Image 1 (tube, rainbow, N blue to C red):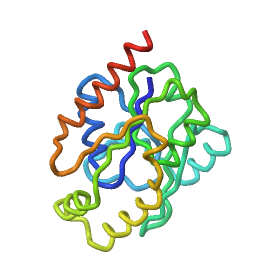
Image 2: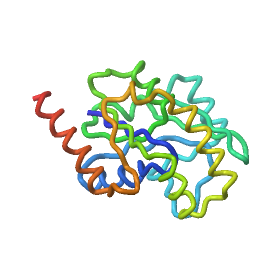
Image 3: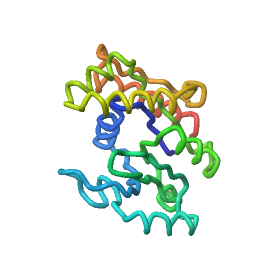
Image 4: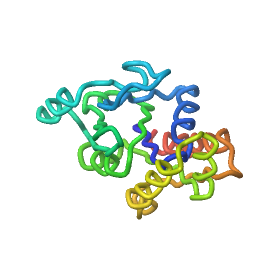
Length: 187
């Protein structure tokens, strides 16, 4: 089963992903052209590659999904390889709505279970402020997410709320509960 996590900026999707990995799920490591940040590890956080390498892989139909983000320092590309989805069980990946729609087209839908980690705007603003994000960048990301995530509720399998009243363990427990139920119906 492929577990897809989706969520706006500061929704907690990375923290949820890390908790699921601690519980035995395997993270699908995606590719990116963005620069490595302090504390990140090559081939663990991402496969960091050049824009030229990424574009060559696109031309070879290497990616099951890919997308680009406009950042202050240029355009960054992100994607996941077809091969990484093969023969894996309990695989977890974080995607944006565009990437999710692409893998629904390119992979077997029955193998995919999706979760929209939903946080309201008030919660997101509080988290961005606590994280120390600059106000201008935070507002840009929120605006972009409002457009990108519009209507996603109708396209995913499950919506999991992660607002200020929720805890990460509660969110993870809900996801695991849904996944355990899915495994029961498969077998």
